Length: 89
Image (tube, rainbow, N blue to C red; front, top):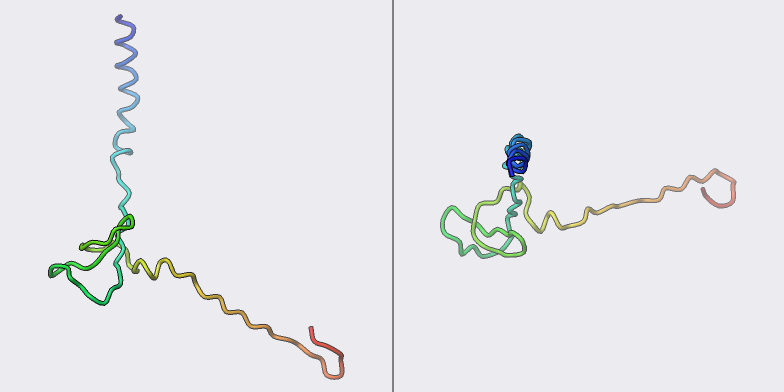
């Protein structure tokens, strides 16, 4: 019985230094939601979190719609043609 109690105290002592690391929380992204109407109270704006739209203050610098847009990659082909040669490379 005493051995189990000592083991429990020892295990708690090993877990104690890890507790401050577990207490640090990662901020949940709250995105601004672009809309034409703003029915939120003064000082708040439409935000989205976990798929739900509500009123709040965003903690992200870009809106939700901007974050979802894929970047546009525009590529242009440039051909180099030697004078007098057939075809281009």
